[in-house]
Length: 320
Image (cartoon, rainbow, N blue to C red; front, top):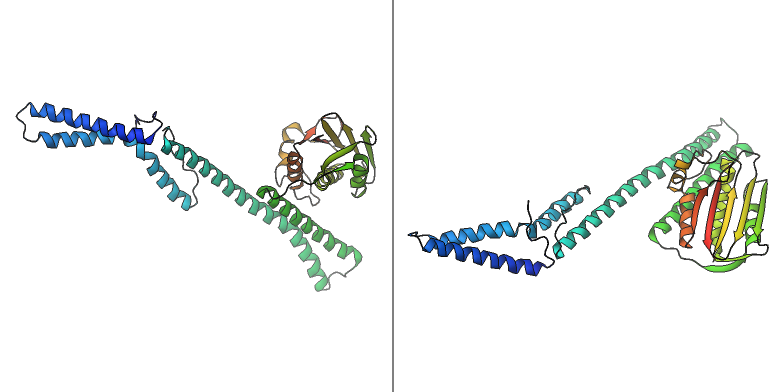
């Protein structure tokens, strides 16, 4: 329906204008009716004033009625309703804020549902495997040999990794983590990170030699450890991992390159989504890369997949 007063920016001005228009309409109707032998001139003037007021003021309160209906729908879990926000006054601004809130609530509800489903799926596999091993031992089907206990330990470690990732994800979403910057030797740091991983063949290079970096060492270690282990999972069993760093005037660029098949260009953005494991089937939670990119952005840097020819290259860029 037409809202003739939507272009006005003040609700007070709209109200005053409605009163003026109604008075003019009533006065004009009464004057015209008084010129004729019509007994109900005053009543006719009042009816005309009410009709004009309804037409002119319709758009002033309709957003409030729409918000009331949308709020009732949201109370029942339906976040799809939106309010027509064409008015430029205070109610129109409220309608815009209401639509933004509805969209945020819809996104939060979608994320909550996906998170519950994904976490349930991720927990089901290691719990089922661990339960099967323990039941076999309890029933005497298998003995508690080091190999059997090792399988149970592997699944327990997988559960621990998932819990740790979920805790980091919760802190990420809540903005509860800040940065504790310090200056450290880049080569020693990268060698330490790679040495603590499961990779057997690796190389570390830093240009210029002896370069230092000022950043949150624990957060950068979390990023690098995730990238190195990701390279191990997606590379061949006997493949090498190359870690190289170049410190420039403005940025520090660190590349982690494996000898795997690489990631297709259409899938490169998706690997940073939560619970996307990029084809990994050996226990990755699918949260690590999302947390790694968040840690990079927390420093004001970036984390991307870049072309290097063969293999896959993750590039971490941090401001100096």
